[in-house]
Image (cartoon, rainbow, N blue to C red):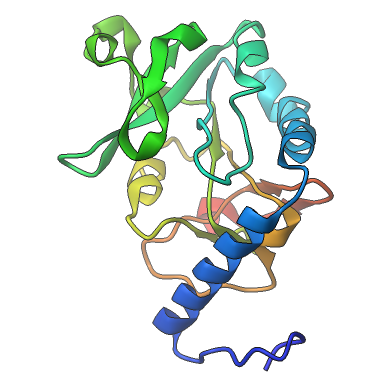
Length: 208
């Protein structure tokens, strides 16, 4: 049992499901999401890696994730190429879009703000993962090694595997999403840094 008297499963797959569900409940219950999200996003834009980057991928928040959509308009004024991912539902792949104005986004799959349909295929709007200098990553749960647990569909694992090794992977999370250790699989990608409202956790990244 843990400190709350909850009996935790012991096999990795059941443990992963247990932690994912607990992290989701924690995140939904998190109070002051707007204020905490602002603090976390400020930490992100204060990073030396952010100052040095020319092309930065941001995620657009969905559900109870750390909220980025309130900071994105300001990020568009920082003189950087701001890139956001969008989901190709038919292939379960994430594609990258060069965002220049918030009006280019509309609500799409899974109620996530995504690029307008007519803009997605424009060559000037298409970005390759290898062009990213810094990558912001969402997630459901993280641990002290920088291990990440997503929604279980592998969207970000596939995308991050194509990013340049020298492009830092920085996750945003609330404190309530961080655990001492979470089960990992061979395809899981570790973060270089996890930013929360009170912590900056250095992960082992892809060297691991």
